Image (cartoon, rainbow, N blue to C red):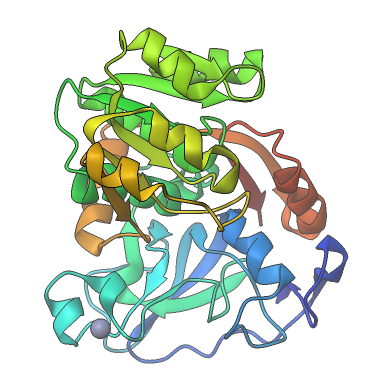
Length: 340
Ligand SMILES: [Zn+2]
């Protein structure tokens, strides 16, 4: 089969469109013919080199496709079903997994991180990963959902305990997680302030449900938040940008506010003023992926149309290197998706 594989870490040029062996189907696995696979920043990090990634490697965490073949032990799934894949692998029998905390499992990994992912034509996964999608949903839309909606839901609902009517500041509306977070906060009838890098992205953020927008290149985020909230500050800051916005994200919190973060796209070496942390009684929460329960819960809202996948642009699988360059340039609003 064809796949995008890299044999060394480096820039987009290391991504090779080449023939690789087809996966051998285990009796307890399901073989999926990949139709679409969304990109994430994780693909860029993995390509540049992360500990534990074995070469050669196939990226790809967010997969949608059709069931091609089922293992002998599989029941409840039919050949030809349209599905998306849960973007994580876990042992499914340890204490954490059976307690519903899959991301605490010692064997936990993101699909396409420590194991080969979906930048290819065929992928074999455990049945627990295979989730049917509505007929009305395109593969491009389905592939753009799992990782970012799972991450944003886990951050806001499971970690930060989002409640109706709260003020929420969403950093980087143009990113996949940002566009998911705006919609989730809106669904909870929150007051949403979103930041973006230009007028057209701010307009799109408002169309997704942001009540207020801030140009994070031209305006000082915390000053604008103070103005918009009448000096109160926000209940929750949704962070994933890192060093470039961290101080402003902290300053935008109300007394007793919560900052929840899932990433450090612009750098991880951020400072925390401990005086502000204790005097303002802030809560700092880390979040990574989410649980299978979170995924099923958020997918219920997506399948019902209450949350909408945001696809910026698609590229054919053979042009994955170009898609990586595009994602790196941060021009997108929403997801960049490979079609297979
Ligand atoms: Zn486990």
